[in-house]
Structure formats: C-alpha cells, structure tokens
Amino acid sequence: MIKLIIVEDERIIRNGIEKHMQWEALGISEVRTCENAEEAFLLCEDYKPDIIISDIRMPGMNGIDFCTKIRKQLPESQIIFISGFSDKEYLKAGISLGAISYVEKPIDIEELSEAVKKAVLSVHRVNRQNVNALHSLLCSGNLDKENYYNNIQLFECVKTLEKDELFYISILESKNEIGDFTEFNRKCKEKICSIKSGKAIHFLADSMSNNQFVFLISTAHLDILEDMEMKDIIFQELFSLKKEEDDWFLGIGNQVSTIDMLSQSFKSAKEALKSISYKGWNSYAFFSEERTEYQDNIQEVVINRFHKILLDKDEKEALNIINDISYKQLENHAVLNFYVRNTYFTLDNIISQVDKTIHLNGFEQPDTVNAEFLDQAKTIKEMQEYVCNHIIEIMEETEEEQKNNFLIKHLMDYINQNFSNRDLTIQALADVVYLSPTYLSNLFKKKTGITVGQYLMNIRMKKAEDFLKNPQLKLYQVAEMVGYEDANYFAKIFKKKTGMLPSEYREVK
Image (cartoon, rainbow, N blue to C red; front, side, top):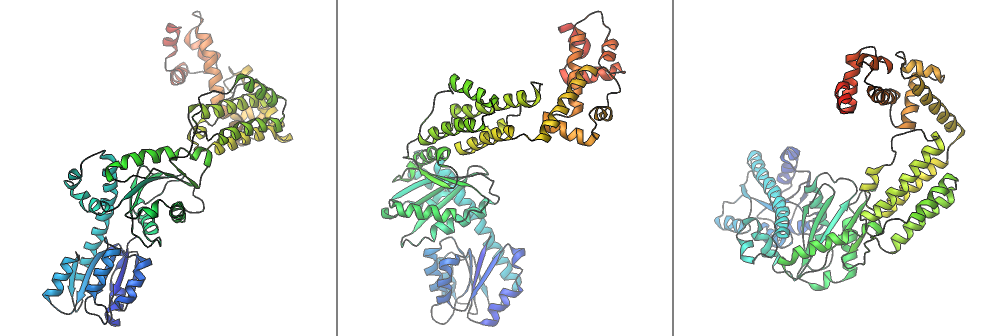
C-alpha cells in the first residue's frame, strides 16, 4: 500500500491531478489533498505519505520550506515538485532535498505519471533496502564500521543508527502466515514511529519466514527504551495490527549500545521467544525471564495409573492427571523441548491404545495420534487442550456410536474369514451389515482411518505373505487363495504393497 499526498493551493489544478491520474495503475492505493503547506504538515503527522506532490509557490509556507521540514520526520518520502516558474534556485533547492522529479505547469499528465512511477519504484527500493539492511546488520557479526560503509545499501541506514545510543531486537511469531511482508513492514513502522514520545524512534524489519519477523527498534534517547511503560506501548501498538483471528507472540531481546552488538540482542530475542510455551499466544516476553529446560521423561508409575484410569472410564481423574502435569510445567516456565513434547506424545498414544481396546476390542487400526499437531504446537496449553479433548472424545461414546463400532468389528471379522472370496465387493460387504455402500465407506474410514478396500487388500497381502512361505504352492494358487483370479494383477498389487514381486519375496523368505 503506497500513500500519496497532493499539496497545491489552486483548486482546479489540485482536483485535476487527483481525478485524472490513473492512481491504481501507477501503484498508488490512497491519495489525500491539501490546499496549503500548513494543513499538509499537520496531516502528514498521522498520514505519513510515501510520496509527496507539492507546489513550490504557495501562500504562507512555500513547498521548499514544507518539504525541508517534513524531510526531518519522513526522510524516506519521495518528493515531486510542481511549479509554474522555471527558476534555477527552486530547482537547486529541490535537488538538495533529493526530489525525485520537477514538473512544470501547465501539468502534463503523462509527464507527472512518469514522475510518480519513478517515485513508486524508489519507495519499493527503499523498503527492500531497509529489510536487507537489517538482515546484513544481523549477519555481520562484529565487523568494523568501515566495512558497513563499503556497502552502499547500508550507508544511509548506519549513518542514521550511529546517532542512537540504545538498540534492541524483537522477534514476532505468528500462528498464521502473514501475506504481504512489505505491507506488513510498512504498517509496523508507521505504528512504532508514530508513538507520541517526543523523541525519534527508528525501526527496521526483516522476514525470517512466513510466520516470523525480526524488528530492530532504536533511539538516541535512553529514557524511551529503558522505560518499561514505553515498551508496553510499543507492544500494544504492534499488536493493534493483529486481526481478530490471528495469534501473535513477541520475544524481546536484550538492549545493546552499539550496532555491532545487534547479533547478541538477536540471539537473546530468540531465547525470549521460547517463553511462548508457558505464556501462550498474544503476549510477549523479555530475554531475562526465567525458563526451565525439562530433562525427564514421564514416570512409569504415572503411565500405568493413567492407562488404568482410562480403562475404568474415569474421565474426571484422567483429565486431572493431564491438568496436573500441565500446571507444573506452566508454573516452572518449561520450554517446549523434546522431553516436554514427549510427555504429551506418550499420554496421547495411551489414549489411542485404550480407544482401540474399548471401542473395537483390540482390532488393529492405524495409529490415530495426531503427531503432526503435537510436534508443531507452540504452547503447553495447546497440547494440554488437545490431549484433554481426545480423552473426552473417547469417553463420550453415544449408543449410536456403540452400534457403529459393533458393525465395523463384525465387518472386519467377516473380511478376515472371507478374504479369499473374489466377489467381496463393497456392495457385498454393505449387504452383510445392512448398510448402503456409501454410508459404510464413510463410517469405516471414520472409525479405522482407512477405506474398506484398503483393509481388504491389507488382509489379503498379509495372508499372501504367509502362503508364499509354503514352497509347495504355485504363485497362481496363492493368488486364487487370496481372492485374485488374475495372477499378474495379484503380483502387481503385491509388489506395490511390499516392494517385491511374489517370487522375489519367496526367495528372500
């Protein structure tokens, strides 16, 4: 999103520029107008335009004075001057302010459009340079200042930051991906730099991934960043950009006094980010906060007790065990290392095993543990809720579900006894349990995690492996014994399942 302001005292010219320029095609998303420099200066305080189109000669404050003044607040804004006077002095002043272009009146729309295109490119270039600048600063280690100046991209950035006396790095973690980083960076910068502190705050950002962003915040005034209340304000300003459905966490690194110490602040910010495990989403943590690295696995006595409680269908006591474990971890500020995650993996696996025992009397099912969720969860609370919900889910079986479980078990028994039947179609199996083929397919997949066809094939291939161990049986006989009339088709299915042809399997075994 690129914002532009037009400052022109002649209404006809001002309205003509606003209405006749193809702003969207030029990459401009928002346009505001002012009839004098004083009004424009007040507007820029909050609006913070990327591009300024300003007349030079206006009543009161002229365009040169206005842009000179605004340059101190918005040093990266691109300036385009317009004037009816071909005056070399004005041109020199525009050059000294770094104006992107100078367009004479009467305004040629094509000429002004070209100037705006050039300004838009400059805005994008500056945004990229700011991101690259922070990336370079963080990766530079302890380089001498002279090496910074050898990099043209860093020159202006370092020259500004050198005047600051205090720096710190923060890392923002987002549960959901943030789409347009350039736009997100721009909004964050607007929020931070507009804080009414009375002092200049500098801001740079870089993208670590689609979900992580690193921020550099610095100022020449120690009282701003050392003030905890001010840090709370910075946090609140950043989080005001968060959508209602989003979840964020901010890790704040230690304060450093020189640019070449930024990597230290960056490392400490990464450590602070670990506090998300016990603080939860939509909060923040400082590097200095205490955190605990658990090194113990869950005790065997707890595992056995948990298993027995589940078999006894004591939902309340099972939930108490999970909540007690989570409470202790949260109280001790545990970070999500292997041992903490393994605790929830272990407990959830027990729930899955008991679920099989209670509902399908031990018949084999695919493992239903959502390992991916538990592995990617960022907070203890998320894993606690996931495992607790799993307990509630297996305990709250309705009469209808009990009936469905019986039907599926009966069907699995039937398949195990009749796998050699070539006519064992989904319709035939549906007739066995008096269900429609579609309903049976959906129900079987829901209860076992695989389709009826996959289960039948798995049984047939398992039986085929047993039959192939008997050298007296011909391959075509084995195919017929497991329900395949075509031996070649059987061989193809067998290889897809085991990685070997039936003849190869027989030789190996």
